[in-house]
Amino acid sequence: MAESESGQEKTEQATPKKLEQRMESGQFARSTEVNTLVLMTAAILGLTMVA
Picture (cartoon, rainbow, N blue to C red):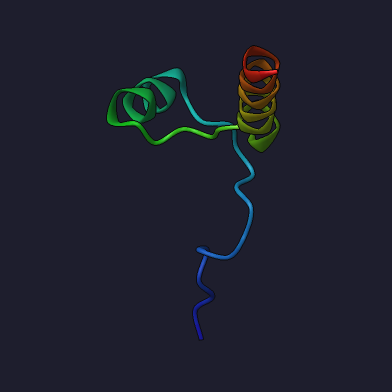
């Protein structure tokens, strides 16, 4: 039986060309901490403007 590589981690780093292609197509990793930070900052600013 042949093993599928879809569930395994890649052993090689992506080439700059592949990274550029992913950035252009919108397929790149995003940190959830950044999204949370932006959301919390917006919430705090909104609350300070109301109060």
